[in-house]
Image (tube, rainbow, N blue to C red; front, side):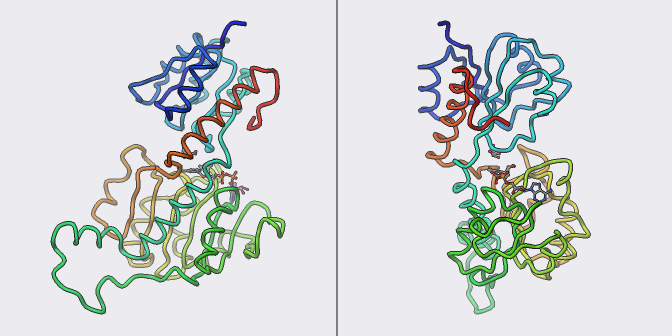
Length: 319
Ligand SMILES: NC(=O)c1ccc[n+]([C@@H]2O[C@H](COP(=O)([O-])OP(=O)(O)OC[C@H]3O[C@@H](n4cnc5c(N)ncnc54)[C@H](O)[C@@H]3O)[C@@H](O)[C@H]2O)c1
Ligand SMILES: O=C(O)[C@H](O)CO
């Protein structure tokens, strides 16, 4: 049987690339640059399958120009906001993602951002690193305690629940808003709120874990930041689209919010230059799932989906 042709748009983990080369006629973008619209369109005529990352944008106008050869887009990501799902499905192209395997790594990063934002990690690191640490006082760099505080989670899915599990280790009082209330075995004692507004009114720490959709664009806007208790801390490891960044900056500069921990930005790569001068914003460059073991697991999960598809089975993560 002829081997299926596979395009891998970015430099995935070595173990993933090795397995892909064993089983497919694979072309890898070793330059590791994001695939452009024209490259995606050309690839649709040359390949049976693509493994993209969230850096490749399958917009409706791009998909409309696809050739018929491409059969499956097996994403190396759980988020699929870079893909127009109806447009792909309408063309008969299967689409999969990589859930579960990155939940712990992403929840770990959310915990890092929450702790770092609450305890002045950015300013603290800088003054030690630059030799500017020349005094100490009991009032120096006093932060906000995480242990025992009230945590609000928006989007109590796989990552949200993994984050809640880690927050329980800090004895946090966990509350959540989700489209639907979770069964008790999933909620694990977390308190459900029937509206975002109700959750915000009690959240000393707020962590976002829902997908970027039309409904969640600018989920956190000026009115909603105002509902948070004074001195709250917000963490975003979901997507930049969820946060109105101008409203966030206003809430921080007016001292309504104490700090923010951000892995995701409206513009990526690059982030928001207006954030750069604010020490109470702890920023990381979209590395939520970036651990070695998780990268291997994501690559293998994408390949599992491809293998199932070409074996005539339903891929485990078919969307
Ligand atoms: N920073 C990173 O590297 C990184 C890594 C993994 C995931 N993510 C992001 O996290 C998101 C969540 O991943 P997941 O695996 O937990 O997905 P998931 O589908 O398991 O969970 C998402 C949850 O959000 C809820 N939800 C959807 N729309 C909502 C809305 N309008 N209001 C409230 N809740 C809503 C869903 O019901 C679900 O419970 C992904 O879509 C992705 O954008 C980012
Ligand atoms: O959605 C995801 O899987 C992460 O953001 C990495 O792409």
